[in-house]
Length: 350
Image (cartoon, rainbow, N blue to C red; front, side):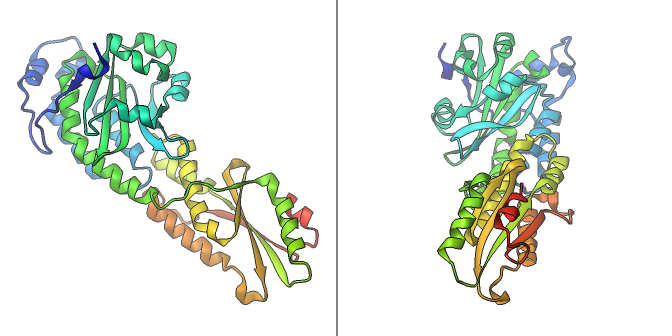
């Protein structure tokens, strides 16, 4: 059978409704050895919608959504994929149960992702048997050969694909698969709205990193001095570390890949400082702003104000940081005030 032959028609279920599909009622009523048979889908749906309602706006809202789905749908092997604008690929933002190889392989190019859902609407896709072949490249050999079924559940805002939920293992597979379809239908609009309002509306204002490598800073600093020989200038070097922000977010968004949190924070910080000078990426995702300042103190960058503004912006984008006092750690160096040896100053940033 072709890949799209298993696209299931959405059930007519809305928020707050009890389960109406008779086929699902029968599946639950039939005795089975699985403990999942004792679950009442309408109760799971209500619990899932109630928990989704409590998620606060944040760039890391997808991790909280995944945690709710994992808990309510008893997902033991699953992932939620989001678009990485750097790679134009859907990558795991939160993942559970898959082996390391699958974590690396589960990157679906944007064009391929859209081709899975050609109508660009919410379509619950169930693959089994030979239908799994198109996704073989995204799974490890072990995961692929042991998978009986895989669900791909998309979340759209209008025609834009926001995320893909991948389910490879859940006790609900032992029942009629329509149960998962109904649960998806009941929550899809809510989840899509949450993802769009929490992430897409914020990420659209964040620039992709236009960063220089840290080993380029010494030469570029020297070049700036040569271009302004004899002028009253200061070279400002502001180093920023987002470790505390990443740790604070990770504590509350435990299902998120830590690398993705760091990526989000780094991009946001870069957006806020890139217009002030040249930005360099240092090891451990530290950023250094190199800025040429002329004249007296009145033209100097107000670093304390900048840090305050960045802290407010980070708290606005990451609800997990609302109660955290220190968001960014910084180190400020100025040439020649702090040292007349520029090479020594730039070297101390490592």
